[in-house]
Length: 380
Image (cartoon, rainbow, N blue to C red; front, side, top):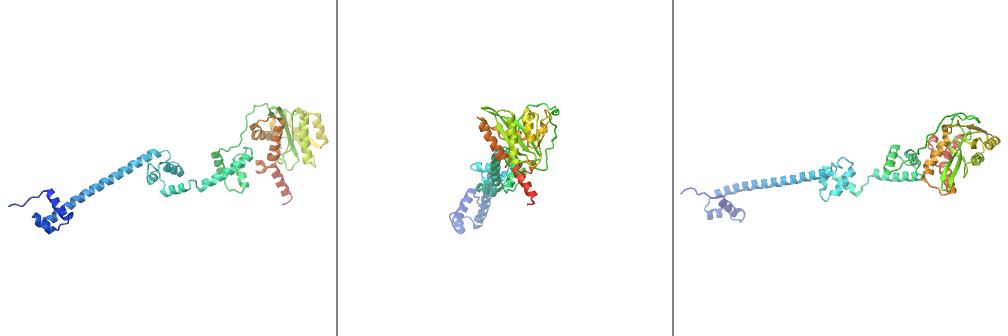
């Protein structure tokens, strides 16, 4: 009788009696008529097959996981291509928005950020610098509003320094740009003729020497108009070239000699100059009148007059009117002349003289500059 051949199924069933049902090898050998050596050999053979199948299953599971990971990363990158090169905070916001669809760690891996950074951002979305920027931006906006929305970033930077804040001008420029805070820009005017013919009445003694060494040495004066719903109002001012302070002003409904005389009278009454003062004007009829000339002679003043058609000879007064109209007049509509006069009073007496910074004064207002020079002279 030859050696019996057993099928693979029989071998599996025989081994199952040992491994699954718990029969001893000797008993299974006796009952099945198979040697113990064969049973052990079958057991080892089936163990290798099972091990191979398990390895394949594990490999398949690994490949499936890898495919799922690659698919997820592909979808993340397709969604995040707009924010991939932006700041971390923008990428964190993307992760927070899509965390219901994708895993946080997978998104962090694709966007090159750390999960710990994302969770820290969730607790406090604004960085310390962002919070500091927000606080200082509010200070800048307050100073900008106080200036009548006329200050640019340089003067606003100086305001921050006055409040004890520490920052550089470039940072202030960035914050004001992002907050939409900008200086009030000028307005266009029709070009005129600047023939520059000399005055027949008075010489141009000032000759554009706008920087003087002491107060009440030289004043400039001019007149302009302000539109109201009642009609025009005419404003005359007198400015001290030393500090650019408005030392006298007057506003009336008619453009007569009286309006410029009232402004000059206020300047003389306020300043009470102890020596002769040079008063410079243009060639309009109010400044060539006999009443004007008589007032100048009686108050120990010396008259200087611009060349005809040359506004640059009286640039300081023109610059003041430009600032007044840019920062205040052209941003309002006045129902009455009295309403306009009150607003001019507020601008000149409450803002321009005591508060508005002047670059030539070292970022000090005219009043502050004069006080500083007095203290220096006294050796304080």
